[in-house]
Image 1 (cartoon, rainbow, N blue to C red):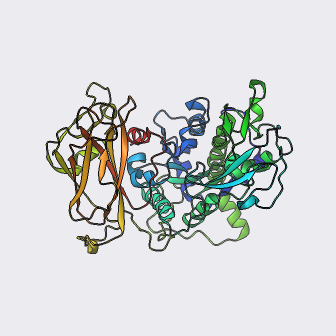
Image 2 (cartoon, rainbow, N blue to C red; image 1 turned 120 degrees about the vertical axis):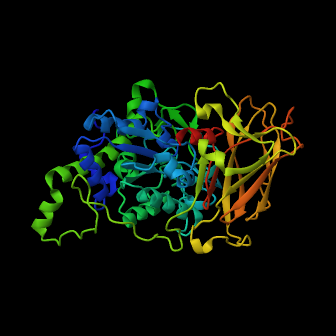
Image 3 (cartoon, helix red, strand yellow; image 1 turned 30 degrees about the vertical axis):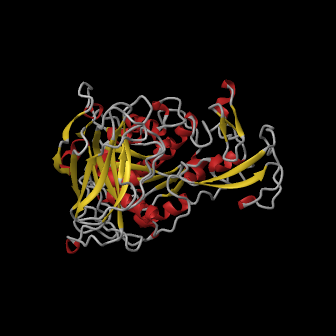
Length: 537
């Protein structure tokens, strides 16, 4: 390790919730041990983005990449963090190829740590909570080892995570997550894909007072099933550190955080750790790890590569297999890695019945969006900020400024690209989600209407796009609407004379990107999320 480890060998073993055959990791290690460069990417929400860390280089992705560079140095490594705060896996499922390119060697996937929805339960600390998991139980406050805090009425908020905690596997959320994994696993290489499960003690519900429940949220358990089905390694922060948090061990304590003014999910303010005691605590706030927590996540990921290295160097599998008399590995026809490592097996059919085998989605961003507009009157493809240094900064898009100007977008809105389904009837009521990115600003912007003109049918919601707001900034924003499935869905966007929520002198409408998906994409937590997506593809 390029730093003094915080985890013990026992912690590391506990944190490896699923390893599997290790075939793809072996192929990755063969490349690294041969002195060749790799391409590694991290996909996830705010924890992956680095929130909670004191600086970008202290986030787990940066620390993990630091480990790779220190252990297998190469100037041509491509090590990129693609985390987007407050989002779910949906945007990555739609834009996976654009995010990681065509030939990644390693992709870390993290979607088990940030709230997506909430449910209110009423109660009072020190008394009986009126409903939910603590109903009818007396709770002691403060719990042992926690500082005294005032009793007060509360609303107990039950939070889920990036991926909803207890969804049926047949739900759109789980189907979308599986489609993301399938897209990544199908990429040339093929890449090693690893699931990383974050754990937020103060968001794990429980009684919201003494502790978070070990088994909640259940998203980790459900997503780990995908690991066992697809032979994808999985590391669990919860498994590695929960017993230390429960015992309030130094370095893993939870009752104080690094940031000031933070509250638990039951509304109790968390005390801020003093400078002299910061290294005793794990979290920056109720959700995100601090520098120590990010380092521990990096150590769990590093342990996977170290385990694969030991097996690769020592021929562990062959030695143990010979001693046990196991049957030899069943060869995959035509599959052999260039460095001699065992080649990964081919993908099984989708685990979820009826899920798309080769999912269809559209992610047309930056230069890729230009050709989505197939006809226009008054709209031009041009930059909104031509003097900026980068393409994204220049905010290129299709722009119209006079009422009546229009642009027609044409795209495939089907979930399955089955040739037999070409020209599918517009009466198909299974709707596709369309996420149209546009500029929203404070000066000269207006509104537009959306109309399905051929092939597909637009739903009744989201038929008016509003590009106005008060804040002194021009940012990319997401406008969502639904269309029926069709191979050639054509939607017309027309500039309206009616003003938006914030009337302005002008009617400008600028379209910059489009995503089409068949599962939910959450991109409304932060105002700059669409900007983040544009910068990451």
